[in-house]
Length: 100
Image 1: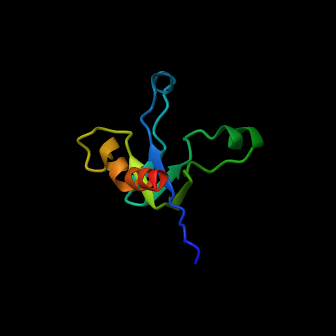
Image 2: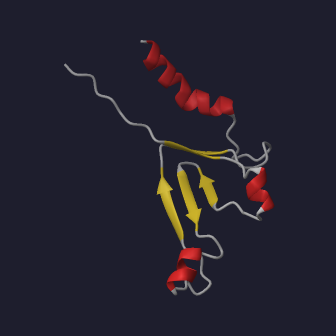
């Protein structure tokens, strides 16, 4: 009998780095439980260069993953996922499989 294996997909949003902050970048990711939403930047350069306009409305794309970890904000935020949370959710299983 063959052992069934599952693929688990996890995403993690990191904080903006110093260079991104200096350039005035803003976070374009929103996470809620297993759902991750990507927002279109306020000025989409591709649309500007192609002559297409979104008419001021910002498009968004929403995806579902097994795990969506928010680590881009304040650690007091209830959505914040610590390294310990990530390890407990997926790291233990990976480590267990690697050592067996």
